[in-house]
Image 1: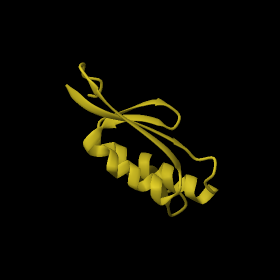
Image 2: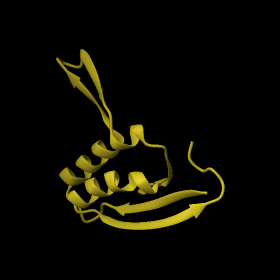
Image 3: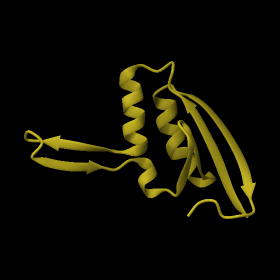
Image 4: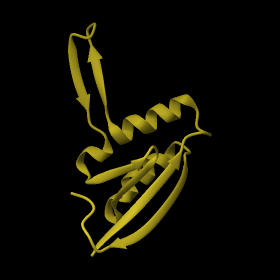
Length: 93
């Protein structure tokens, strides 16, 4: 039995700067320097966590990892809904 969480978040009430900060912190981004001669890949929170996207703004992940994502969302004032459940089958890889 696997304990999972569904995190649903909306960014409608957030400012553009907050939306960008949330997306970069969660998913990571590519950073360029020296007129795009050098490329750096900045990793996000979900790069090291098994997860699945159900839709835009809806993520399934393990209960033990949800606090990392919730901290970023709360810091940037996103609207959050969390549902915890148990799964008999392995959803995450």
